[in-house]
Length: 186
Image (cartoon, rainbow, N blue to C red):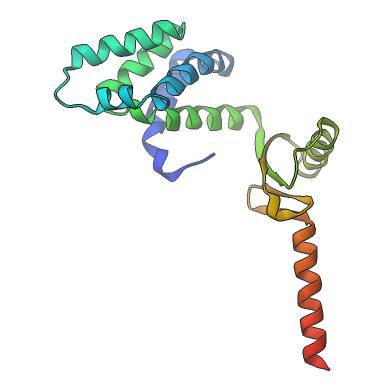
């Protein structure tokens, strides 16, 4: 989730946490902020409006107020949106949300792991992988799943800098290399 290009977000995130007071208070802002982010990301017209230098600040602020109102955003979330608009960063609200989630995870001792699978995981399999990872790292783990049909079967887990590859494609690759090295030695 960490993005070097989102380092601009840190002051916003730090200020938000300071003003909100608790991680729970910050977390309560995520849903309305997500709604605004999705509205902007999903509308070329909104993006063009926000990028257009010919449109005045007053009109853009009115749009932000309307978006915040339609998302039932609390005043603190609306203030964050206005601050992003005033500094020309509103189109990067998604990066700010990512930085907020990263900080929430860090404060709560949660790490994220990415699990790539050839087919969707069942709830039991997902739970088993999560529990095994939590036992290994000694902290809570949030799984993010991705489908990758090239794996054929099995899964690949990335947790920080560690990769656990239990995929059929990896096993076949190892077998191919072993056969190549054995035939080269003969």
